[in-house]
Amino acid sequence: MNSTVLLRSVSGPEILHRCDGYTVWHSGVCDGPHGLCLTLEVLDESGARRMDGEQWQSSTTRRWPLDISVSSPDIVSARPHEVIEARSPHYYRLICMFGKYGRVLGPRPAPDLQLTVIVHPLGVHVTRTLGRSVEDGRNG
Image (tube, rainbow, N blue to C red; front, side):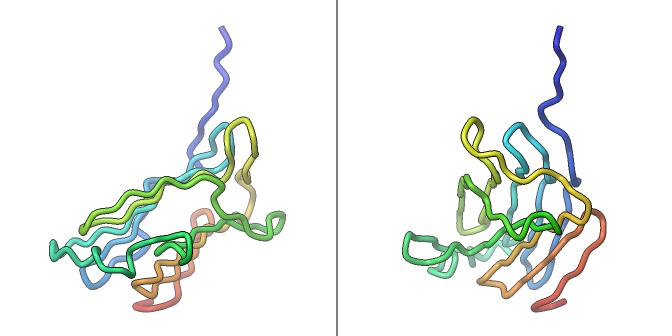
């Protein structure tokens, strides 16, 4: 029986930012059969339905509320190839795959691989490097 491993964890779940009743977190970065993938979520923990305004909406003419990319010395910058979006007045969630199974192979784990997350409505810019972190932007 062939027991090929098709999925492995690159980074565990992590809270990237927490301030003003908002929490930005990811459920872990995985290396799958098509490359890296992760689920990123912004939660409004206040319960005040603050995420139903236009700034949390995406369209074909505007950028999404969240920008996600990975980079390393070997990868200039890569954005997700496939994205599934879900939202409510209490959360905004993106399921991101940096490749497309059977069509495009996305980036693989590498030394100094960096994950960058920008949450435009909150003015948050966070970069994580495999266990080390650097955060800049609003509320440091």
